[in-house]
Length: 241
Image (cartoon, rainbow, N blue to C red; front, side):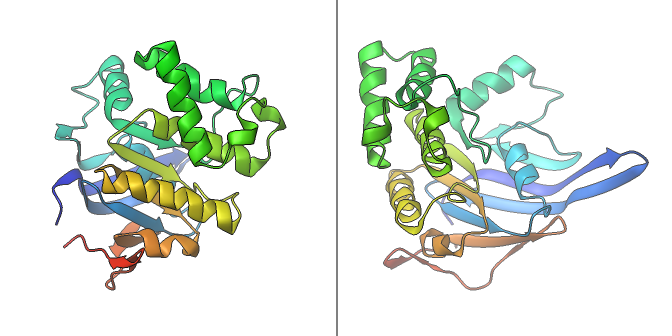
């Protein structure tokens, strides 16, 4: 297996709704290696988003062990400032809801986070334009995102995350609003980053993505299971063993 940079052991998570406790994750074990692309398939409500939130430190396990980039994720030891710095340094998050600034252009949505990270204005602009163009958004760069289609907004959100240069990306249904051509173009961009050593954990229903994953898991009723059969990764077989 590649050097693991995401490790979960015996992770449980539940929420209380009224008088009822809902168990979302039940004893999840997971190891993801550097430069690996992992797919997590499962029905709505199976716990996929919760799993991604725990890996990205936006939520925390009730029980179990979570380690990302050699850092044990424990909110009892890490304050909000520490967690925010950790996410900014290591984690790229692609939300299903996009979380874009509707009053800004596509370029500005990618550009301003880079300024906050310390990029010079010129470098930030060049980086933002490069990533947006790689995702087929050359003609939409100067458009306000509220006038873009759902699929275009989704690609802007992906561009923003990619531009920040994280080590580990968690992606919640990144191709849900994309047609086949744009979905596969996106996956080619992610695969190139993967080959550079970036790591992707992707929750999806999209079976068009199967050839891109090194390892595939199913998550159902909070139970994570690895598919026994490895799938091909592009033209080459990938394996996490």
